[in-house]
Image (cartoon, rainbow, N blue to C red; front, side, top):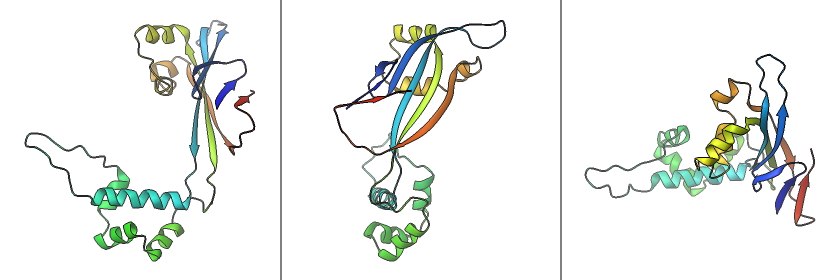
Length: 189
């Protein structure tokens, strides 16, 4: 299902939309000239207690898996964030209880997580609106640097843009429940 935004062109389907606008200058430091008004859409599902527990169990099992063979002169890259560090520092018996699904352990986790005890997770659409000078987009398109929506996600918070009055202007989360009545969903702003 492709999302269409009225008055916006699709740049990357279901992710980035834009339209050309002209901002008239009035002699001050505010941005002016031809810009691209960009909407970046990202959907996410709010975690439920069950999804948090499933994630913890998966991470515990992955961290408990014996290390892979590492040849001399090379190294094994591991993703060790805060959660993984905390898991590794838990006593082995607790890690085993999480992995096995011990009801007392899982009940403790359920009672201490901020995730909601929902059967159906809540879905959100995160909208971010930004202004990017057209010459910036043209430059990076000509260099082949804009391969996917990630470029826009990074660029809208770029210091070089925000310092000059461009970049992200607002963002919002919109709750929705996915119910498909037709092949195409149209959002009107």
